Image (cartoon, rainbow, N blue to C red; front, side):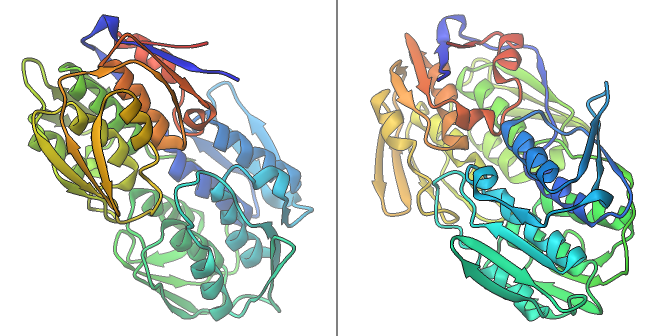
Length: 419
């Protein structure tokens, strides 16, 4: 099994790195292609393990897939034969639940295995299922599978989600766009990835208003058509490389990014002492000659600080000049990187859903184990400021969400390679 090795002998990073398309936007958009009666052509889709799994899943249903030399993917869902997502295909990816809404909305039936993925919390799917039942679906759970059926088209309904859920919002949007009548989703997630999905559906012919707010109004239409569309940049990948520059006291530019998607994160970088400069499609961070300041933060739904950047800022705080507290409010098991950082000399104490961090001058290289996608990224960052060599095992986690990570780090001067 592959391992990532990080050697901090190069020290300072420099230059620029291009950001890939967003994994968390690409996956629901790929699933939404099931709703189109004619082919969809998608660009800026990242080459990642989760994307490959999704394409295998769509292919297993009979969806036609074509790839061109520009890395665009044509998805033809006019050939769907099977309305089932089997356990073997979805066991590694929680986003697989997102086939439920489009299959049920377009075909009136779906059989989807309860999903797997990162072990960072329970992330129950009951909100998805409750909403679909309100739209008239019959839902049963049989032998580890969600079996959903509807008599004719789903019916519009008013759905108040008890908590903000990104995948729940996305699934219910996709179920509602072909439903009969009006669906109102209240307490909807506002993340850029949700907005990207909604805008993609609108381009296909859906009628959605309130995009970007916590209340979405969806007027059902009879059919959707294929279009050309480009996935938004990955704000979390961008934030990760900015964090790499911050902890190594470097100057770095990330290109092909939307700075507006990173407002709360950029605020925290500036609080940590960084200079930030933005253009319409780039962010430059400058930490040269500056000592990291500790920052307290609480993870919350967008537009506040994202849980997917918590582990990266944990590493920044671990080598900052002072004490800090990070409170995780989204997922209950998202401090699994802490014992691995402790193996590298970080001073972190867990108290419930809070982590108290006392900064140290430098970490020490060790063999560590990635436990989930963002934890694996944090361990790479830790290796950049650790004495000696850091070896990260179970690197398949990072391949789920970071495209060409070794090549991108090599380009900006970091010694990160696969063994």
